[in-house]
Length: 337
Ligand SMILES: [Zn+2]
Image (tube, rainbow, N blue to C red; front, side):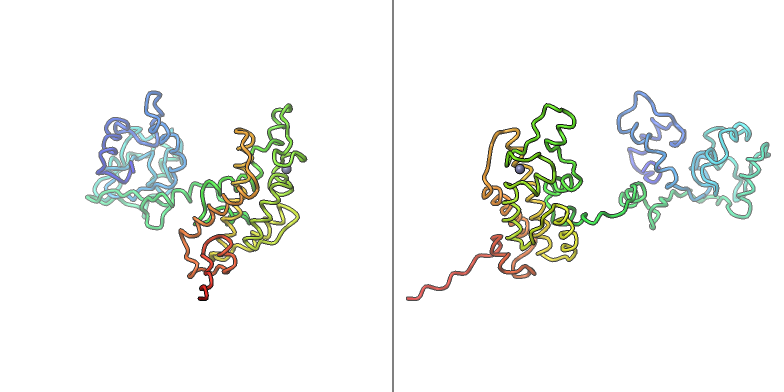
């Protein structure tokens, strides 16, 4: 924005009071500036290679600091010594080595300055009367947008097989978040807490007969097993003997974009969320609910979400599942008179 939005009041203010005819890339971070301005300056290294200048008359381009030369920002490519060697100022503009449509460099007094001028020979010339342009190289349109900025800066990694189980268009964000932590085994179960504080009792609060690990809480516990059995039966998910087995089946079975797949994903995330919520309720508030109460909460959340984006008639949902989740009313036979 500082480079492209010349008409913005904020940009004009930044140039007048913060940059003061100095290059954005070269100024130091002031101690007494605002938090936002300090953050912007700290992130400069991420954006520097993505912002380039297309040379016009050179009046808006900093000679040593902006990316307009084929070699990149000259002060980075050739070192700070080229500035005193050239006899030009640190914040000189390109227009200072231009005469109309031709270059007008001072005599080169170092091999680096010779290289800089040789690289321009027959490849790049100024255009008198034409404004310099700023382009955002991360986007095909050459115009800045947040999407291309995000994709160019983020660290790309291989997709995990379960990502569609947790992150999908109709997901309930708080459910997905807890589901995501559960899959990564990052929920603060009592067994994890015991690693930090050995005096903590790590016994499961549901069954009082096992250590509260991720696997126990969401799969092996006799109490939560009843919740899973009910939900799996309602969603026609086969029963598995391990948490990893269930995840592997879900990873393969939810690839289609159908209402049934969406319901399975919502049901899985809602079950993990409400089991974890019940666990926290028992730890912090000493409030206990039954299996049927937890199942009712899961059913309520899933039903409301499915009804918000699908109607049973247009869905590919089996009627038996639609009835179980309360998505359609069962028609009573007419009373014979
Ligand atoms: Zn248990």
